[in-house]
Image 1 (tube, rainbow, N blue to C red):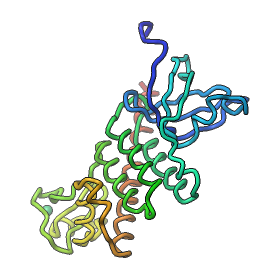
Image 2 (image 1 turned 90 degrees about the vertical axis):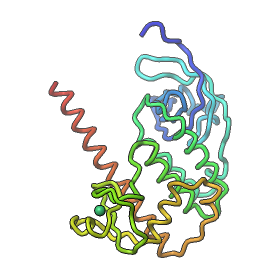
Image 3 (image 1 turned 45 degrees about the vertical axis):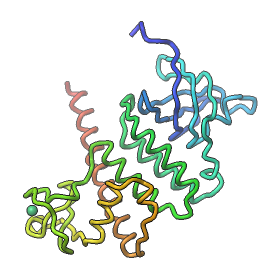
Image 4 (image 1 turned 30 degrees about the vertical axis):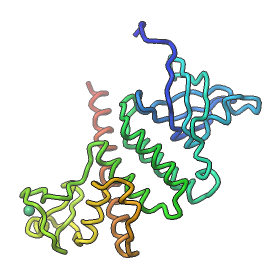
Length: 255
Ligand SMILES: [Zn+2]
């Protein structure tokens, strides 16, 4: 494509970075307009580099990028938001890693997703300030799923489409992507019971604005249940995605 601009400017959240060559780094970043990109930051491992402090993990950076043959190249970089607390506390750092990894794994390159970019930026800021990361992480997980096309169905039985009754013996079934009424849950040997309190918390996280979610008080058993169900669901979706990506690559090779 010869008529593309040689340079472009974008905000970018640094998701991942790895050493490349003698003094360079390869960055995986999330941008609003261009989606996920892999960019080469040249010379940033030299102590004299002016860009170095501006392309650390989890930073929001404004970049001028030059199109390159294999990788586009970071030509200028300036911090917009450093999210400093994320680098000063090991727990916060590990949670930021988790958010960045989820975005990296759910998003394909060059697939713009402005709401997801904004969700990640907001969630990194919230993690920095939160004493308890639990709600920040669960809110992020459910909204990530919605914004990437994997929103779990929590209002209707995925089989009969009837509204779920407020009872303690509804079910959740990973391969069906959501909740089932008691009747249809029993037809799925691998479905798990979905207690009413867990269903309500998941719905609240999925539909209420963050300002309301931030005030939720949950007992330890409910927290554990919500966390493990979401983790199981995300793991299930990612494994299926990875398989389908593998499959597509195989098809392409055969074709
Ligand atoms: Zn049903």
